[in-house]
Image (cartoon, rainbow, N blue to C red):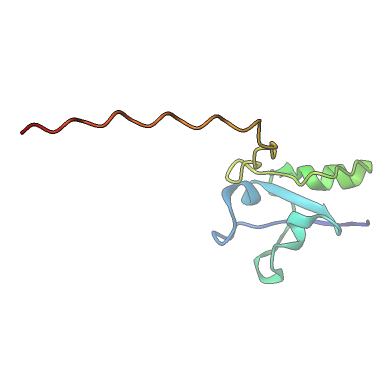
Length: 96
């Protein structure tokens, strides 16, 4: 992991949350997704990317970073005990 000159993107090709931050770490997964032709130098007053901050401070978390547009999936829960079968519905007696 190495520091790079700060860059950001304003390209509509990226989610708004990606356009609101700047990057300055060469290992940032979000920064790596920005194509060279969409990179703009500097911070332009944007917030520091959370992934870059993690890299900068050496905090590596096994779970991926989630953005508001992509909420995390709920945890997998094993199935509970089998449910008893439902009783059959009473048949309607026809009229003659």
